[in-house]
Length: 51
Image 1 (cartoon, one colour):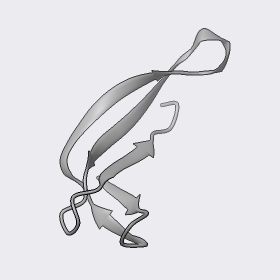
Image 2 (image 1 turned 90 degrees about the horizontal axis):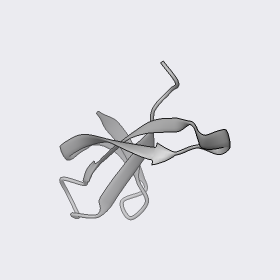
Image 3 (image 1 turned 135 degrees about the vertical axis):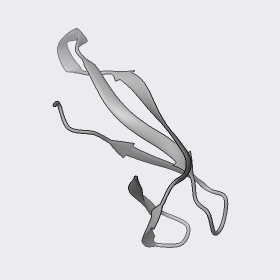
Image 4 (image 1 turned 180 degrees about the horizontal axis):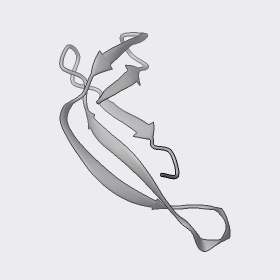
């Protein structure tokens, strides 16, 4: 899964990516991916679509 690293200021492939659920508007559940940047080790986060 590719996400944007705010420290490197570039899109990178996430290391140790895993899917998480977060609260959405109106009590809905939204899916997201979280992982680490392979270059600098910063935590990366990407919100997935509804499907």
